[in-house]
Structure formats: C-alpha cells, structure tokens
Length: 329
Image 1 (cartoon, rainbow, N blue to C red):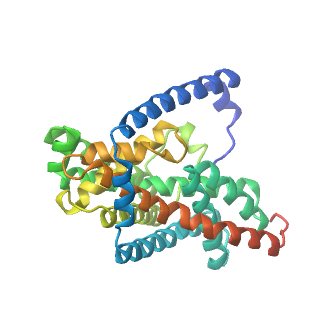
Image 2 (cartoon, rainbow, N blue to C red; image 1 turned 90 degrees about the horizontal axis):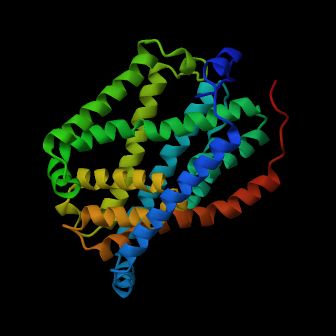
Image 3 (cartoon, rainbow, N blue to C red; image 1 turned 90 degrees about the vertical axis):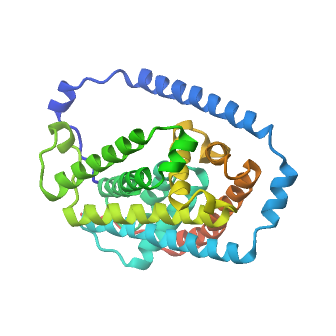
C-alpha cells in the first residue's frame, strides 16, 4: 500500500515527541526485550543434549529433505506473486522473470537476516530502482508486500483457533472460550479489512490520507496468497517434525505462528533460538525438545541458508549485467 506524505493538518493535529527521544526509547525497549529473550534461550539451551540434536539432524530421511525443498520452492513462488500484485497495484508492468528474481533475492536475504521489512525491503528498493521505478512507488511496493505478508495471519489464527482446540488447551492453557474469542476477533478484523476494500467503508482521516487501499479483488488475493504461503511453511515444519501427527497440522500451524510472533517481538536477529525455544515449550508434551530443535535446524537450512547461497551469486551477476534505467516520470 503506497504511503502518502503527511499533510500540515495531520502534523498539527498529532504532535509527535522529539525524534531523538523517541528513537532512544525505542532502542532501549528493544534491547530490554532482546535481553530477556536471550536469557530465556540460554536457560532453555542448558537443558538440551546437543549430540542428540546432531544425531537427529543426520537421521533426517533424504525423501523428507526432497519434500522440504519442493515446499520451499513453492513458498518462493507464492512470495513472487506478492511483488507482482504490488507492482500492478502501483500501476507498473514488469516481466514476471524480473519480478521473480527481485522477489527471490529480497526474501532470501530477508529470511536469512530475519527482517524482510528492513533487509528485504532495502534489496527490493535498490533493485526496483534499477528498473526505473520512482522512489515513492518503491516505498509503496515495500509496504504492500509487508501488508500482504501478514494479511493471511487473520485467517489462519481464526481457523487454527477453531480447529486446534485440544492443542490450545494443553499447550497454551487457554480455555475453549478464549480460543473461540480469538478466532472471532480475527474474523472481525478480516471483515473490517474486506469492508473498507470491497464495500468502501470509510476510514479515519489520518489513515485514509496516508495509504492507497487495494481493490476488493486484490485484497482477497492478498489474504488468500498470504494464508497459503504461511500454510506451506507450516507444512514444511510438519513434514520435518517426527511425531507431528500427534499434534495435528493445525496445532503445528498455530504453534509456528505463536513462535513467529514471539521471535518478531524479541528483536533477536532472525529469531535465532527464540523460535526454537518457543516451539519446544509449546510442543514439549508431544515431541522432545531436542527433536524440535533438530527439525528447526533443517528447517532453517532449507528455508534460509540454501536460498541465500543461491541468491548471493545470482544477485551479483544480476547487478553486474543489468543496466540501470532512468526513473519513470
């Protein structure tokens, strides 16, 4: 969604605290959260048997690895459609081969670093600039891709909240009414988003002045693609986790979403250790922690390391061989 410049009226109506103070408070809060996250991870790691973890990694069947590679390729294909939608929303047409390459390079670095919005966005901003796309439009594309990434979570939280009741009560210790309430809240947020895009429900002025909403059909495509892509990643984890059948696919999906949220909030780069710790704590009654950590190592290898190893030489060749175009008027 393409951000617009704030108007003078907006600035007068909503005074912001001094930027240096705001940045200092943001950094301080982030460091405090990261400190407690690292302490939690280190405490969890002391109880693990690392020889057992390495043995579990080596015991991963080749057929499982092949299936994982197929799921990772499916994930990157779906992610490339995020960029395609963003470009069409911005009114630009680019050959799909270039869109796929830019999307792959951006998400590969973003996944490896653990910040698709910042690291992946920086790659996306630079590479689309080489195609002559103006800076303002590039920022809109980055925002649109970020919005698409998280739009499908509402659907999945609602679905998992209704279909993984046993797991929620045993792992999250939430009563049945709590998970149903979370599902209903997610559905209401989803309906609100679709309402403003399909039915043109009015937005608050301070929001309407800053974003350009997609059409209803584009919003539906965003949500569907995002939900499907998150489900593919959960399927990858389900495939790699021995004993995942005892939890169920929607239980694994919900545990993965909770772990992703915790890793994002923790401010730890890549969520390293946080993702594994939260997943292990959620699944400890069904799957041994060492097995969860071993499966997550293979998960990261397939989703983060291998794509990055491909992206680095491909991206270098692309930068050397692609001439920079002048920004469009």
